[in-house]
Amino acid sequence: MRRRTLGLLPLLLLAACVVERDYVGPERPVAELARIEGAPRLNAGLPLAPVIRKVDERVVSFRSPSVLVLPGSHRLLVDCVMAATRTTTRFELIVETYPGRRYVLRADSAPGNQRCGSVQVDER
Image (cartoon, rainbow, N blue to C red; front, side, top):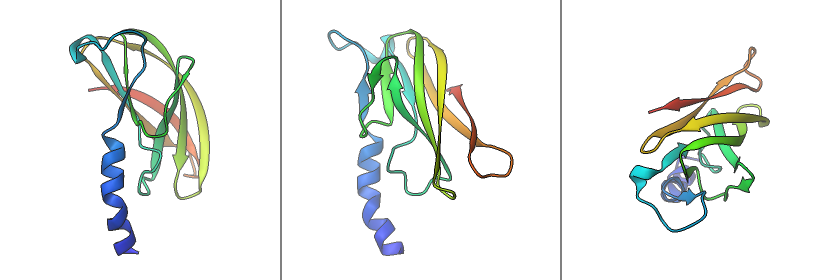
């Protein structure tokens, strides 16, 4: 089992590095954008994994745990996966973003630890 996990590590690290651009137009400097980070869909058994499915009306690629957005208000569709019970709970969040800032999704389990109870956005 350990050997199998170690074999997946390079793929997981590569997946964690992919950042998707979620705006139309030419590339912009990172200082003008906000970054929203969730968990990778292939996540090596994280107990709770908040995965970004959509930003506004745009579906996020399965390869992208992070998304660069223009500053402003954004609607996120997030699937929170609980590894122990193999359950997925969907959340819709509204987040106000500012240029040059990073936002990380954080999940908490519901009472009884059978599913995700909530997903919050922490600014870092």
